[in-house]
Picture 1 (cartoon, one colour):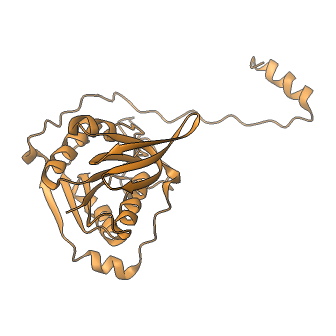
Picture 2: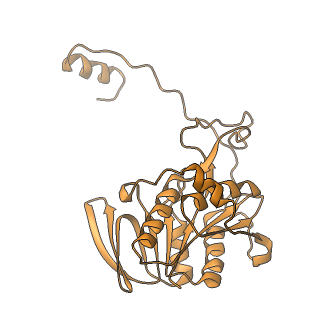
Picture 3: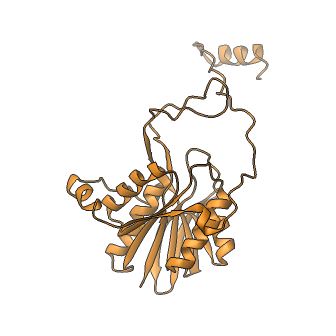
Length: 249
């Protein structure tokens, strides 16, 4: 079966203003709206479009996180994914752990393609896709803004500093998605009801034999300094004078 595995991460919704805890131990999540990582929604949308073109038979959504991540997986099922897998853990997981979990799922599901968001908006690490490709020993194409499948080859247009680059990779492969790849579809109420009947498997992280101990210790978080109030200038000369006064010119 031609299968696509898509990663979904539960993050604070991008419309929410993130607040640091008073003791600096983390960010406030209690009572905060959580959503699927926007880049992951783009990855899922692309997988669904590939399936709708007849180039895949099944789309499987997977997440690594707490029990509450089931909600984001149900949303993925409502969008159109066929099945979902939650690798449950209550602790914070870093990219190397997520990559090894995905490797285990790849061994179990044998997908033709793995599509991930290029990064998560909570940590901006941009590491998991690359790490998975190395562990899986398969090609990768990151920052994809266009994806075409031609037989056993994926043709990917990717965004780089100099503009656009087009590469071809043999399948199976790992693709990570950029913002301009597509616009995810809206979830409709009937699809939400149908999603409740779709299978969602829960696997305990400990059962996979993966060491989830953190490699990085966060000592303290601090909010960014408040932005200074701007000033109005009449012309360029006054602007230059103001910059010189602040030691910026």
